Length: 210
Length: 210
DNA sequence: GTTGTTATATTAACAACGTTAAGTAAATTG
DNA sequence: CAATTTACTTAACGTTGTTAATATAACAAC
Image (cartoon, rainbow over all chains, first blue to last red; front, side):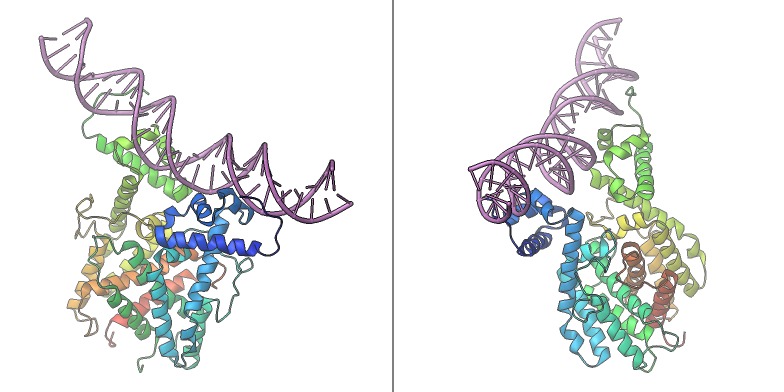
């Protein structure tokens, strides 16, 4: 393949090409199949070419994570338009679970794998953006619910509430992803588990009247 | 090293020697450092000798998991003696979290890593044993609480309740293990998160009167 | 006691991985 | 047109998991 002359910011295009190829590999063949050589093959380049765009595999995986975080936030963008905060929280939870269970390998990479901690300074994503930051989306709903007086009187830290709700959903989703085939446990239907954890979160965090 | 004559069931001893060496490696140097060669070095054998006792690395990891599951159940054995089921559930949750957070690498291996599903038939552990099966321990407490009429009227499936409590605890612990260094989220104190999820579970699952 | 046979371990070696070094061809620059 | 730079490739290295080939020691049989 003949080496072309220098290019402007179509370097960026190549970066996203690499990332997309890797993400498709993730989906179709799982984590272990995502090798530098295989990624390169998919885009018609040599494996070493990837190193012209990413310092190492870790950096590439981080970039993939960024893309996935963005995809998650985008998939939740519409539910943020729901006015009623209770309905919005339910829809947000359901959307989160849907993302996790339809993209288990991506979810694994994003939330279940050891990785150099994500630094907002270095990320391409905008923190506290309603369209790019899923955690901010959750925190917004929690804030709205808090302002409307839904939560129990002793609950004042919106971060703490948000992280607890997240933990509940993440617990169900991640157990489903990594252990649902395990015969040791008599697993209940995933829908039932998702429904109950949401109910429990609501009941546990909110005032009785609700 | 001179090859000794055949041995009886001190083969078993060698197996546990390998497993223990690997587990210590897990603790001290993390998942990536656990290579067949490094394990072998620790026990003074050649890497290929391990294959006389385990089919492959997966089988060894599964055996390590078994040992860890047993260790978890053992660490919870004493709390099972608590008579009051509410106190017992609290103690069980706290013990579970303590295990997870003091042995994060083991916890990762047990509950957060892709692995051939554990088949009770092949496991060395006894299912439904109060001393070897942590899930059974949880289910027992849930059953006791259910029998004593603590749970809301619409909750009848003890498996579903147990799995939901588990998911809540697992959610907090696993997020702590894999994301606590992440700067994107303004993480609250882990103790506060553990306390709140337990409260929420109790309130969410049990009758108001409690 | 020599001879097999078997069990236990070793060293060599392979394929696949991430990654670095060295080399090559096209465009740009003086 | 020579020199440099850019974008890539192929070779190669070190480390993995794993298999093949080999060696050594005990036991059994005659």
